[in-house]
Amino acid sequence: MYTIGEMAKKLGIAPSTLRYYDKEGIMPFVKRTDGGIRMFGDEDYEWLQIISCLKKAGMSLKDIKEFIYMTMKGDETIEDRLNLFLKQRELIEKQIKELQETLETVKFKCWYYETAKKAGSVEAVKNMDDSEIPPEFLHIAEKLKNK
Image (cartoon, rainbow, N blue to C red; front, top):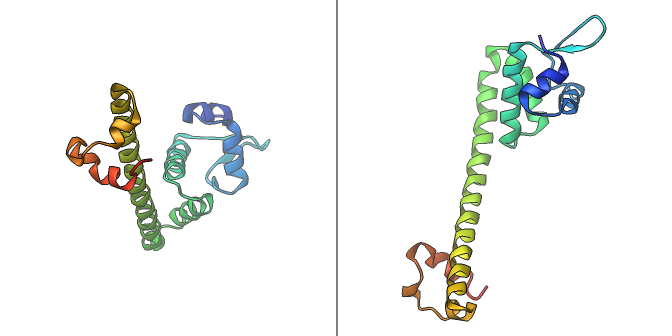
């Protein structure tokens, strides 16, 4: 068994985060001593790792709480849990696509300013013919013309 401080350290989060989760009803599985002190077991650690993953995935605390309660209800909620995760997967895939586009733009701007630095001016890059721009950046260069 672990105290809240020990579990927080093991997870790499602040004890206040665990207190907040408990206050929000996200940890109905956590046991308490007769004195009301939260005590965590290894199974709780597994739950908390899942909660941490879902938070990183951008899932709301409301949906995380719903998932935990569905899981505790058992097999009758399998379809609902699947739908929750399908929805979250779709959101993550959209975020990844947006981040990939952002990364491509940043890479282009790195190339742009490295090239401008070598040439001594951004004008040299602005005046480049499309054939001088690396093919992977042509679509971005067109979008960002003179920016």
